[in-house]
Length: 166
Image (cartoon, rainbow, N blue to C red; front, side, top):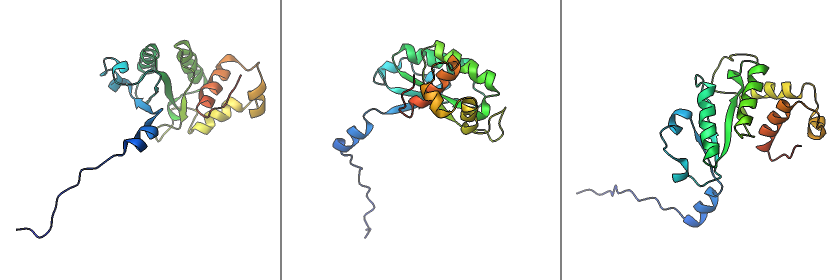
């Protein structure tokens, strides 16, 4: 006969606090895991923000395929732009143009999960510094003559901070 009771209580969740907390949630997928979901509309509310994690070694084509599919299914797509795996400005502009062609207008700029940069950028701020190298922040917010690619990058990143540009 045991003197101590080792029973575990089942956790209880208050739906009145959990539901508001989860309202407007976002989710993250990787291309290889997204491929296992037949139709995201069956598991997520339309309009959900879906981040696409760009893990080192994932070809940009897989990222674009996933983005295209999610856009077509009615989701707000926000791919990762990991600075450390972006080789140079030409690569950055290529990615932006290709995502923009799919209807993606936002991105999450971050340093990335690799220790040694594959190119010019070692962190997200270096990527930002290049964008702003010829335009001050105030000029970027008011100018309408910035090249389209730069405008798109600024809009993609700034949208996450609720800035209104252009």
